[in-house]
Length: 577
DNA sequence: GCCGTTTTCGGCCCGACTGTTTTCAGTCG
View (tube, rainbow, N blue to C red):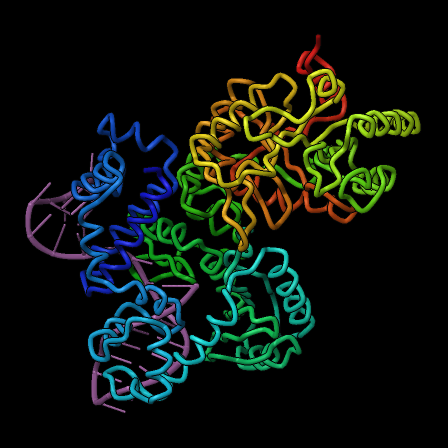
């Protein structure tokens, strides 16, 4: 059993313990354990073999024993017993806003409700109002919650949420009462998928600011409102939380509401050890006096003896320790990107010709572009036969003569066939400046076979990089089952690049794995997988993910200047007969 | 269930908001 699965089970145990009314600290121990395993850098099987799990902070005797059982046998009796006691429908009920473990437990104990359907029926029958801690309002909210769940899965891709949030922020910034404003939360941390939009405002009159906000045309409905906080639904269904603080509180609140929760928790623990209390209003000594003054987040961190931690990496994965030691990475920036690979054209399923893609790339300030249409097996996408490959190469040669400050590299996105081989004979593959090897078929292979398939493709001398390594489509499709640890190892051994597919529906490799690749010495190419000129801009979503994965300029393949890239692609890497 | 330069027992991050209550529990972030 792998790391991800172990992490999922520990988390589920935490939830079940809450549902059973166990000590909240006990379930928290499982949540912490789950998170720790999820972010584990080392191979969990090896840790178990060497009996080194117990050295990890947060893994004690009980968790050590349980994780060991899971990893070695694939089962955990404790987990299965718990599962036997709790109807699966209770987990779904937890997704309803306003229902937590305690209330779900009451519904189960008193009304015997075990599914969303039964719950909806009980609401309609007006049975919830008689329960302790419930009333008419709660019953109505539960009913609405069920309907909302049915209508919407409630998770959104980053670009959609960003667009909506930016509109709200721009509109609010025009009001004189709004002194400062920013998005916060997962959106500011640039997560690939977000649940809601958090907006923080500094101002002295919260009531007026909340009135202004509630009156914005995008706001469909205000669902909660207090003295400092307003929750609303947008017409698109996205939940927005607005929080108003005073200008003095703003930097602290911005840090607090940016999170992540895990980062904040660790920051507060660290503060507490130094006799400081950290909350959204400030940093305070034990005598409740303000500790240091700050106008910006930079000062918030420096007052606490830390380097400035960029929002993207506030995930409590070592950033606080690094900030303490002055060893935070210098994260890659959009301006570091020098060129763009993985570009489709009219030759296969793109919507523009090579010249149009080149012009757009040049406008973006790029110094090179790597054209890579689909290979012949990708019938559905108009994959290129050998004749088309040669024709395209001639066109690229012709276009290249037009520029002395820009380079078009000849490439292909070659399907990785089921047996791990590439889609053309080596004589053809050897003609390309670069080859992206990607899986587009036989997604259902078992983990071992799929891993072997990718490892074999990476070992091919003509392969330059591995495209969209897991094949996932966010909110739509799980990736294929593959052992990324092995894939990264193979990339390192063969000196190959791994793509970070920057299409916002993919963002594949995920940020945790970017970091793992970096540590293994594997460089990442941030590729938009563009099918239109506009699509080239997706590369910047990939930069977000790369930053979350602690990548620096040196870790990013397409941050290489043109001259260095020419050396990379025109020297020994290619297959020669 | 985890943890310990005061501790192997007694803590465990913190606060706002809602709806139910009449002083607070539960939920959420």
